[in-house]
Amino acid sequence: GSRAGIIDGKAFAAGVRADVARHVARLKSDHGIIPGLAVVLVGTDPASEVYVRNKGIQTREAGMQSFEHKLSETASQDELMALIARLNADPAVHGILVQLPLPRHMDADAVINAIDPAKDVDGFHVLNVGLLGTGQKAMVPCTPLGCLMLLRDRLGDLSGLNAVVIGRSNIVGKPMAQLLLRESCTVTVAHSRTRDLAAVCRGADILVAAVGRPRMIRGDWIKPGATVIDVGINRIAEGDRTRLVGDVDFDSAVGVAGAITPVPGGVGPMTIACLLANTLTACCRANGLAEPE
Ligand code: NDP
Image (cartoon, rainbow, N blue to C red; front, side, top):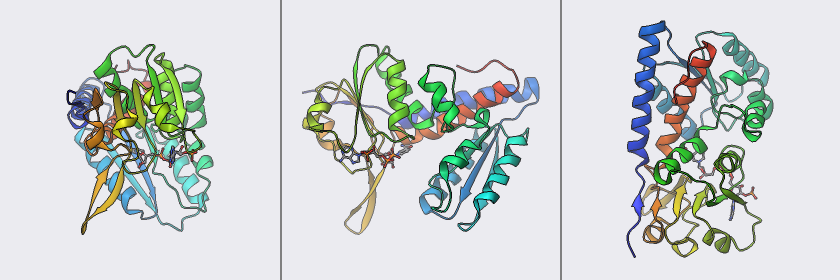
């Protein structure tokens, strides 16, 4: 068979960031407005620290203001709530992101729902979840939004396609399913209790894997020609080093799929690009200006 097309998420994300930067420059020159993104990190989780640092760098590169707030692992929930209240009230802050996971002594749902929904650039506030689920204008979670952009770029109209989403988290799986339903796909959501997952996957024209299990999905689970979006980021040991792999076994999948995202360089870069796009959107809405596409 023919080799799969490899979807270059890194290049696509660079294009999205360039579009955002152009809009940001115009907001500044025409209206004197600078979009601002506040990122809140509680504790010292190494992966979270890397994400927060990258978000800050890319936010500034797009011409926006980045506000980074670090609280200690032992900070109280009241302290975090007070910070969120200040950011909600700050007109220079258009987007607020609280890096997850939070320490166990905090109630993550309560914290997320304390964010002004108009500034909830992660799209995790229950109001935004409800707006998305009912087909209203919402802040859409960044990772599924990035996946959808790649799919639409590759396939155009998704209407009528069979989409299988593996994973049902609030962060990736569920909003991904909502977005695909909105595109008129026939959506199946699989999870750890799904029976004969391989057979379910073989029916998919679009397969989105958001599981967190290295190389679980094998080539013989994939319908020939299907479009495969691998959200998984798994660090595995290889000799005395470590490397990142997806939830899909890329080497066996690449010859079967019609197109597939690599890890790294697929969905990952799209997530931050969509975060910047959401911050720009929030800023435009806050100022009553036309939103970029
Ligand atoms: P969660 O752990 O919250 O959810 C994992 C989902 O996978 C659950 O719904 C779980 O089912 C399901 N699952 C677990 N084991 C199996 C199995 N053997 N068969 C079928 N389903 C299974 O993870 P997230 O959604 O937060 O993240 C998923 C992956 O995506 C991770 O690797 C994460 O690192 C990555 N990620 C990448 C991002 C990016 O920017 N590219 C952003 C966010 C996440 P159940 O509900 O039944 O337990």
